[in-house]
Length: 193
Image (cartoon, rainbow, N blue to C red; front, side, top):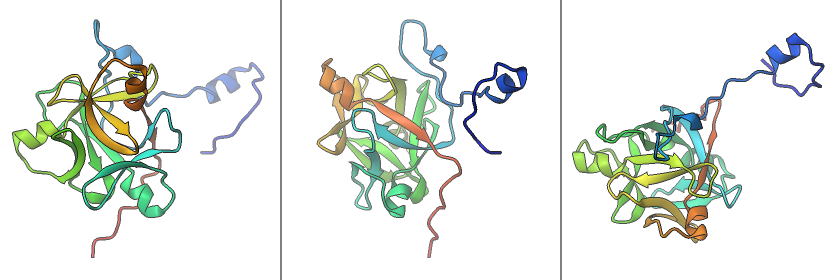
């Protein structure tokens, strides 16, 4: 299949070929009285800070997480996440971010720092690595609330990602709003030696 740009000639054939299925979360799934977004699971994304196009969440080998351009192949692999159902199954509408290039490593809230850590099958780890996806606090995109600290979100602060309490400011809302950029096809996983 090839995607191409074509002029709308108002024919039924054009309308059929120009109809797409939205694979992103449907804002119609926002719960009454809240902003929780039902999120599909098991898909690969790069996560872009809405206010800084081209700056993505990326993991480092030392377990830190930062904003970065994804220019090299390693950057792209370390900035790709498999969004899965939240590891804490007791939290509704939640996700966990598995680092695609690291296998069983996940983003987690570690005392207010966003870190990468190897999966430990404990209730504490599962809750620390679970985030509730909500409509972007800046109006578009998504924000990710820490399941273990309600009212605290993943935010970018001078290029570093951390977990901070929502202070209600426009600056906070922008720093806590991201766009998921779905990937297709899946990038090549690194070869383990």
